[in-house]
Image (cartoon, rainbow, N blue to C red; front, side, top):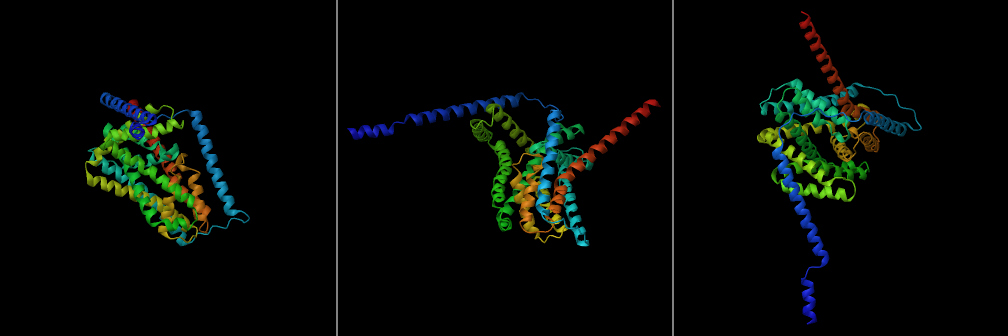
Length: 404
């Protein structure tokens, strides 16, 4: 009898398992309710004109700019003091080969902007919009400009959408092109990461920087996460909702996320927006393949810049070793929320390349950072200046016509 009673008690669910099942049912019901609310909101939404991204609090922006300048100055000072401690800076001697390598780095920058411009021109043609080299180039360059000046590179796509719409591209096309550009760009870097992680482990191991190697793997996962979630959102939206809800609720438990339900809805809405717009481009599979190829070429050109920068100052370095090390660095610093990963990018570059004993690492770091970061800020400012002059000429012509 005692044995049977024991077996009966074992068969009956414990109090803890009951509570666990109840919590699971509650979360499932809450997710379902959120999903239904999302569907209702999506049905009620009407196509609204994209708004110009808000500038935010001016005081905070100025404080952020000052901190950004101080951070860059501090990193440059620390790397310079490490490079030239107890010795005077060696005179920089440029030979014919040095100039050729510097030109190689500049050609990488041209290739980067060329790939992005070509992507937008191809998407314009596919969507039946006017094909304009000027607008394609400006969209590509200003997208990089806003990525460079906003924390975590979050400003590029919103401004690109507004820029295209303000230049008389339709609402759908203005959204589809930047979002598809971002999606393919993420996958392009993931493709490069796969090659680096398979074939480039020896290059990063030679530097002895295992910390960068580990953080690169984590950073690559974040690159994969967004494109994969966009795909899941298009194929199985309920599963996407559950995955988002799981991570957001972990954030709420750790007191990182304040309004979990609002955050879930916002994230799912963004994923759905990406998915819907990308499907407009993905209808032409061959176009998608070409966009992925150009995005991979973009990332390849970006990660080739350190080789040319190091060789400009006499460093002896294998091209593919340099490429793989740069991929590891880029993946490792992706989690740093500063504009353009400032501070972490320069520091990681100097730590990795100086550990190989390459000559002129400090100067190479400055050249590399100018090519892959500051050049986009300079180009963005020049485009703004050109557009301002064009508007001024238009106003003068209008005033002349009125006077006549």
